[in-house]
Image (tube, rainbow, N blue to C red; front, side):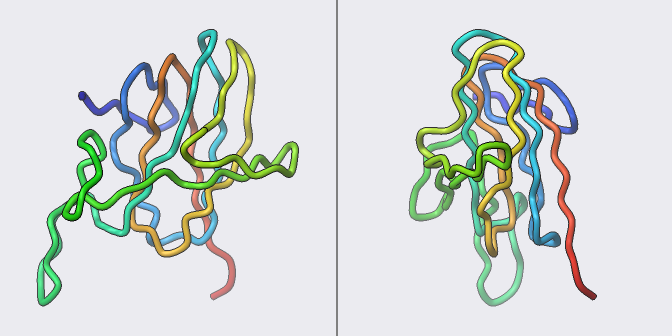
Length: 132
């Protein structure tokens, strides 16, 4: 499966490129559905997008491949900021053209995430931290 771009852009029937999130505490996504019956799920991993080095060397995550003992990712729980409801990660956001979702991902200690889209959606990401 080909990976699609996700820097304030459109993702259609694919999994986005990995987004590094390990340096920020809060992860806000603006999702606008562009087609009928679109589903957006988020995959998260404790692995970096690239292979790590050192004592605990592990290969980089490949979100386009199935999850496994060496390709460690899973669906991430989504908090809908508008409704205050949580959405199970394996269910994802489901909507039609022009539906808009403002969501936060529950991704404590994850290194990377990617958006899985069936249909078409415009997705914008903003990560930020508070404190020192």
